[in-house]
Image (cartoon, rainbow, N blue to C red; front, side, top):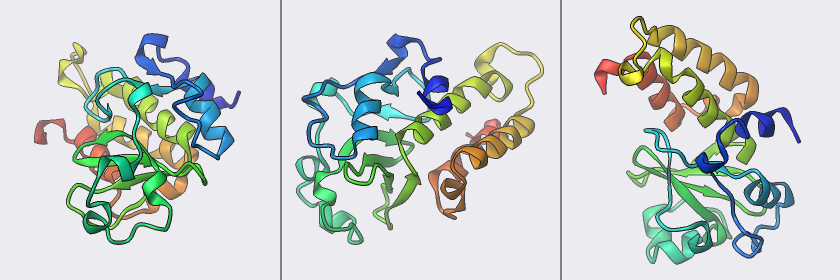
Length: 187
């Protein structure tokens, strides 16, 4: 178990969704299949990630989910029809490339797709960090003196340590999320 996996396991079991061997049978990247089967991805209610509707057994590929997949995103590589649709971050679909293990963002505005995270543990760890910092940026947390700007700075630093390339993408949804953290009243 990696340090990232351990951090994700800090979510209560009912806050994580795991997938059966049958649901991940098409994933050739064994670390990703293992992560989905044994660790799972955070599924607790939060503003940053929503699982695809239905149970993990109803998980779909992009090809099954979209009849017009290549019309919506013209830059998809060969084989993207087989990517596993995991859910959404605000306005964008999130999918796992089951061959490489990379987590991709498919922007809702049909702009170019891009790697959101290098792998599932990094993606899940980012979600864990957002939840761990929530009391420092969310007005509804009950904490009297929140410090959103400091929370955003800590998150940025920690995210860069985990997956530096994720924040190197200029238009990454992570930048928008960090902006929302820093300026919660702008939401």
